[in-house]
Length: 124
Image 1 (cartoon, rainbow, N blue to C red):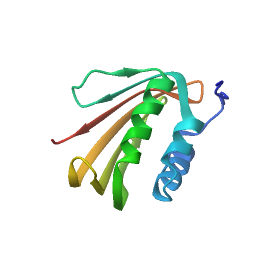
Image 2 (image 1 turned 120 degrees about the vertical axis):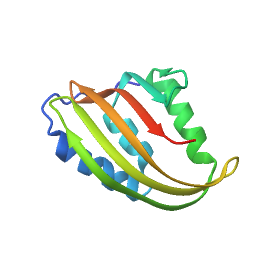
Image 3 (image 1 turned 120 degrees about the horizontal axis):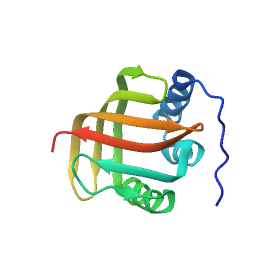
Image 4 (image 1 turned 30 degrees about the vertical axis):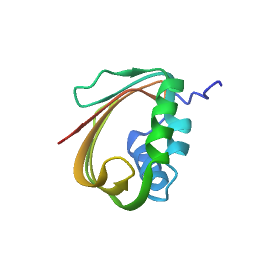
């Protein structure tokens, strides 16, 4: 699968689009639209997952185990030329972990109109 690359982007506009997709339950659409084929994603200090295909499987597995999505809300966001820092409030019930309510920070590094690296920071 080839990902279309858009090199002329506004990170604030992209963040708004990602928020709208996530909030309407279409997080995987945002993933397909904005993440590079070589993306590296990491949860806290866990080993990184490399490549879009491996991250797609990881994300699909996560969302398949969501029993009830109570709320997601972006709280704070900051931008540099090639990075989005965002804080989210999340509340969902997961098949394996039960109900999870927490704040998470995402740091996305962008290149050529796509996320090339994303790391999530949150309490355990």
